[in-house]
Image 1 (cartoon, rainbow, N blue to C red):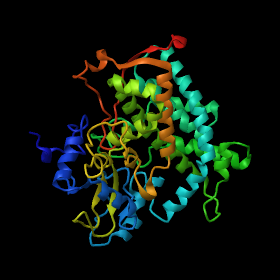
Image 2 (cartoon, helix red, strand yellow):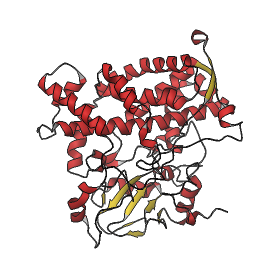
Image 3 (cartoon, helix red, strand yellow):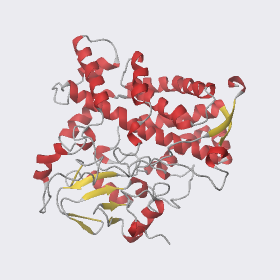
Image 4 (cartoon, helix red, strand yellow):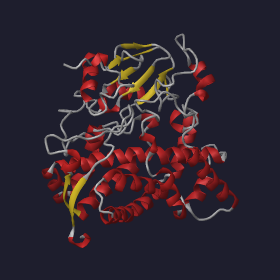
Length: 430
């Protein structure tokens, strides 16, 4: 029997391959339960998670990407620590990124972001995705490789968001060279089970690039996406600093890729492991959108998101003192049996699959969710169009019933680090 109480979710690596028994153990005790090693209040219940996400007055997002490490820079004492949070939040890692903002600043910056990713722009980007998917599959087949994450997933996700944000095509190779390896999930970075310290700003390259683009378009406007970014204003009509726009673009660029790549891995892993599921999706393409939602539910790309309690409050019958670090565990809430029947079963036709909170909920719902869904749907469609008999490489992952997979070694992200597949190219691709 596993001694779950002895496991350090944040510093140990025992739970990287399969965190779900631990999540179930936590929820069985209470959907709001303090873990023993770092004092983090773990929210594993669906309704309780929704309550936290919706309550920005009680729960600050200042520590959203980092949680207990490095911790708040000063002691938080008393029943209301809101003033201390505002005084010292700039000292936390990534404090210049929108995901750490609270209203009203978050409201203004999110409104600016939504002016950048309009429905029209998303439709144009989807047209690009279809072409890019074929191009990446061509490269994948021509290279003779079988490792899907780096061979297809990472370059596809990066170039999709680069196109969405209007990165000039001449610079795509520069971005691939600097960012194509997906550095954010390596051990030692944010959310890594082995990290001991965090750089204040790991996105300097993106900041510099997007600031230069914005400055250039403000000097010489053109009829392109980047000019639209450069001329976008806050809801009150004020013009943001170039660095503000650059930070918003950089956040979408970095965060959107990670979520999408993890989703691709789960989807292709499921298809390659289950011939009957693969056959169903080939013959009934109308199931693919819900298949994507069930992938997001059962393997949430982001295990959880953090909040810092501003005031002493109660959640699920549990008192949460002001200053407490709270982790909303998406990966657990999406398997809450009170919300999802037989939650550990993968059901491609699950009626409420889209009720998952893989993209968060409330004011901080991931703005790139429509993008990730489209990327997943198009990727699955084109793989099924271009490849027959997609299967897991037994040489790399072992035989059916005894597979071994390496998962991203962080307490934030969830997904395979690599995925080796085999397939038969369609006659036109052979």
